[in-house]
Length: 357
Image (cartoon, rainbow, N blue to C red):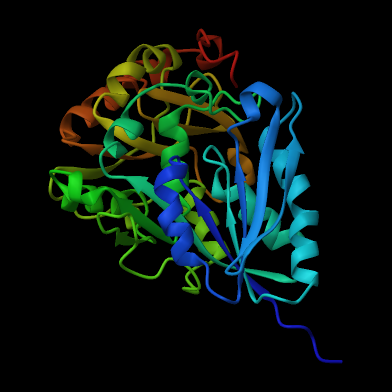
């Protein structure tokens, strides 16, 4: 029995629904069906609205109810049956899924790859605003403060969402580039955040000037690897046009109190950083390090004994006008000194991260 060919799917993400519209139009052709989910009604009514259309016009519409749990999880759970129904009709060979502005591509793509064998994720496209990109990546404003949170538990900030959308994208569409004073610098910044991505400019009307769907660029393993633990010298991009990425590494553990006191200085001038660190008072734990804008977070990744690595600290940081020597000095000052290594009872150190680890 001959297997049915898979239906290709292009995923569209980005914080601005308005800037995404011309890109969405460019993705739809006579053999494409589009599913667009928006969150305008989420703050007031607790629903995500969806509509389905193809080149001939509207096909269907409806709502997904979002409760007090994980809004992204509920969206995925509700979307999959809708996609299954569309694919089963065998009327189109390509699906475009435009996610809500606050949705990250990674959980959606992961669910599609692992649960829908009839679909082949083809391209993840992210639309970014050249005018607001640096501001969105550099602040600490919560999505909830802008009415964009995907439910009450969503405590992400705008910088975190923007960075994660870019980091998972095969194609980044740089909209409003004609209004930017330094579009080349923004192009360079996007490549530093995600060397896998292809940057496509948009014309003044917002229409992309290059392919944004059916590119065949999506590679699940490569996307997952880049979105995971970023801490290796082969991930560095050449500095240029004010954008720098640096790798900091140490085989000594960090003093938890000194690290906590230095957090603001560490993220100053850093747009995005990720890595794995070793806290002296948690000698067996691998601790995830992540920052976006002015916010830094730590989380547990398991035990050092479960890996092939000796305990160490590795952080990759990208910034605009970043001073690598200054950042290195700040992080080095957070390490245990030689005398502390020899004399301290590490596990008796105060733990300022007890509430998050």
